Amino acid sequence: MNKKKSKRLTPTAGILLVCALAVLCVAIVLILGRGNLPQPMDDTSEAPTTTAPSTTKPEPTTDAPLTINNVVTTEPDTTEAPSDSTEPPATSTPTTKQSESTGRIIVDVNRDDWYFIVVNAGREMPEGYVPELKEILGCGKCLDYRVAPHYEEMYYAAKQDGITLTPYSAYRSYERQKNNYNNLTKSYMSQYNLNEADAAKKAATVILPPGTSEHNLGFAMDICGTESSFSGTKEYAWLQQHAHEYGFILRYTAEKQPITGIIPEPWHWRYVGVENAEKIKNSGLCLEEYLDSIGVAY
Image (cartoon, rainbow, N blue to C red):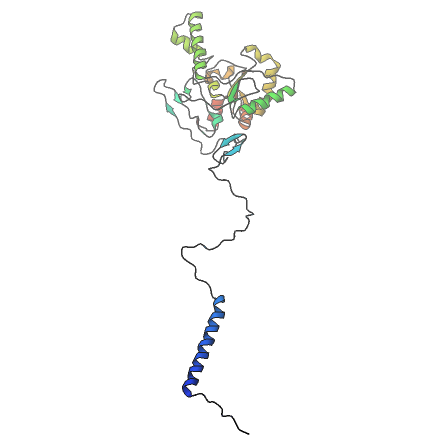
């Protein structure tokens, strides 16, 4: 039997074959491993985003209008309600200056303890000042907005006791006060044969000059009328017993006329705050005396 001769590779061919196989293996590894390598991101492209549904309630912005008590505002409601406390703040130091035209002291209407503002023949409101007003009981008469709720509360409490505290004269404008004062001055000139200066001085004991009345501040109410006989009524008796419980005091009495300069007015009740009203009533002092006694400047 004839034997076939086996073919042998030459050394050069063997080396080439090994190199080819090696290159092939490297290529296969690179191809298979490429899918696991991170792909480069183009600097101008955006990465894909997957936003989950938000469960947080967005906060309101100050740009969007808010509706508070049916009033549209562009600011959040951060206004605090007037404090029920009627004690004077320890740092309350009202600023005062003197009017060049009248010589009266101009009161500080922006003081923190506003319920202690004192106006009288020697003290007046700043020129052009008009308080923020609120109508009471739907009757068309107004008081300072901080005082009005207390009068209404007192009115309804009296009603439950069978007493009607009819609002007679509440806030008065500067012009109305001026007309009332001038008319009374003219009346006294005629009635008592007085010159204008003396008549005006006498009139000021009944109707204060414009800008110096508690009615101009919106702090006081004339109740049921302006007759001295009011002091003998059941309405007056109820006020004497209960008005301080709602922050009101009888402002002008006969015994304090030398201090207040005003004739007795049993119908005129002024707001000073509940705590202060009780203390003033118990002290027997008028407002000016009481403020002096506790060291509060006015």
